[in-house]
Image (cartoon, rainbow, N blue to C red):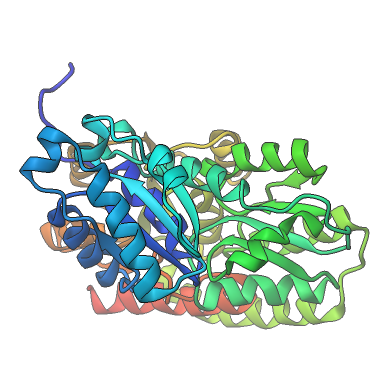
Length: 400
């Protein structure tokens, strides 16, 4: 039955597009919107640990909605360029400016500023956050300069989280003997994006949003792409390293193997607290498979697997892990909040692995929560596996 209301488990297109822009450190996001849109986005992203001082609004009002706000937008672009002197200004539409059909590309063509301008149509009602990631990432690809001399480096494509995990991924790749050229777009710059055509390989890190951009780059710049499992947990990290090393024809050094042994020994000590515990995993497309694999390494039983948006290989990757490990979870594909709530009430897991949004579920059922979804959390690589396993143990023992 199709309901006329819903408690949503996904956010809007503008959110995803904005996160792509915020990864570019010398860019400013100018959202053509009323003030409330930007206040709420700044608040939400601030709680999640993002730096929100580069999110501005044109502060559309009633007159702009009725008569058009292109004059206001043009003036705002000029003022932002003059005051902040960014290398890039991304102009994003909101529900209000999209509904009235504001032509931001026309405004961009008519305004004369020093910064590069990147118009992105991102009205919230046009799709969810993954649609925003896709749209903005394809626009970012348009910034790449053609004709660069190729080297043996690789690009990380569709990366929106930075912090420890991003640095750990780069370190693992360096141990294979390969340099990361550009990261689109977490913790990057306009110059790095422009030079992305130098790389010989694109590694897709967000499977739900990265394939479109990867195909464009393959066609335009001749860069092949691959999508390994994200390196969350011991087996997924080993698979990540092996997949990349084989793709670039490099031998793996001894360092990752030593780290793997240390991780295996440390996690063995933790299993007494995790063994046999039932877990609900709530995640996006790229993390759901490696997280499922990781909890089996802790000898836990995933009873609910909830995926907010599936990508091209999500179900195949997940079903392979489920079959190999003889699992029988309840799988929720792109559910809404009530679906997840009812499933937890039915399955009664001992732990929820998710993010901040799951706090209400944790408190409602008195089930401990392990947040793995935000930039400062250590989850990737063999070292991240130890940290994540310890946090899961602490959550179970504390009951929080």
